[in-house]
Length: 269
Image (cartoon, rainbow, N blue to C red; front, side, top):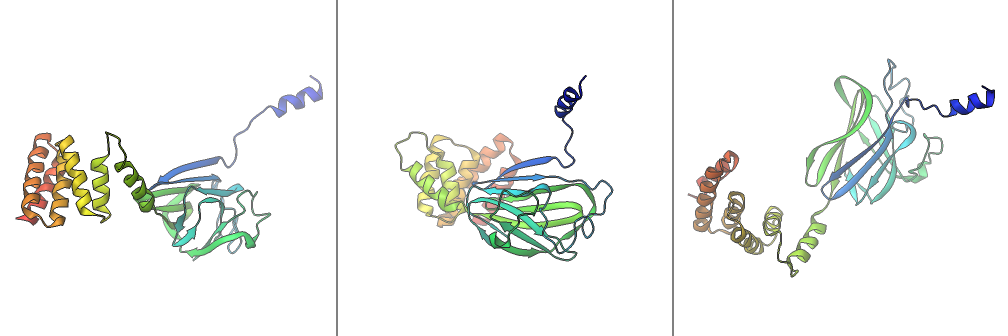
């Protein structure tokens, strides 16, 4: 085989990446989040304060700087982040980390990092983990309708951040448009539940839940009806609805709603 042919064959070889790239897609509320980063491993090395020095800007991963995409405006630890694409960078410290959201989303490492492009900077306290984590990980958990915890974890260090989103105004408009339409199949239960949980017009919520019950006499729908009636101050009607929901829940053998209705009935008697 000629040397040129050998080189051509070698060029076709593909080897595993030392720090594999990961794309994490997560929805929080009605916001789509995408995080793309390369995941280095410990591999027996001392990381923070050594391989990754304290006090210097870090790409927060390997290879290209970690990229974050938000489909709507968000807040991270209380700081406003408009919808868009950003680089997530950090300055590790023994007792405090600086988190940087930078507008230069396409960067290799920190070689072209420009502080003038920082959208926000804020500090967080790192938390020690009970055992070392081999591969750097960015993850989301503790989900609620409008928030989640975002964590960077590697070695024995966890860097927690609070991610908040707002979907109420957007979904309110969507519900109002949907319920005002001429469609036959409308989400009466879901709309009533949203109105009730977000302290909107209870009379409107009652109309929708009544329509939902008329379509389907289900224990969970009647339970919502009972709660709305109770909040409106109609204890007699609320008690009757709660007892009916309890009866339906017992027939369905749904112990969770049995307990919920028993608890509600006690507050109404």
